[in-house]
Length: 54
Image 1 (cartoon, rainbow, N blue to C red):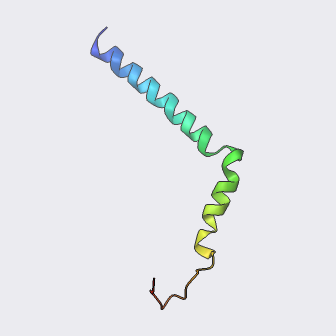
Image 2 (image 1 turned 30 degrees about the horizontal axis):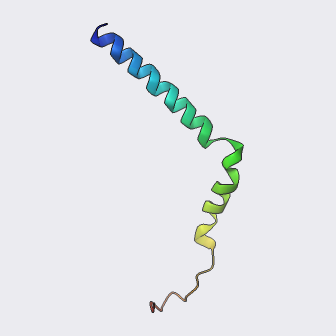
Image 3 (image 1 turned 180 degrees about the horizontal axis):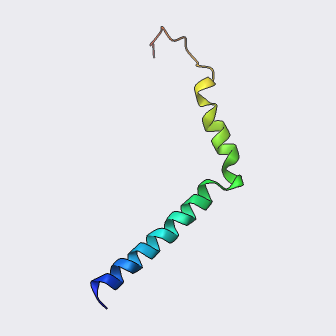
């Protein structure tokens, strides 16, 4: 086993991990969570913007 074999094996493992992450991110099961995160900037604040009283 030489260094080039190990580099090739590492490349293959990382490529498979990348494809797996792409499938995980774009799966339809995660759509609800992404929709909720996309609407967070439009959520109503508890306090008006001018007051920073805690």
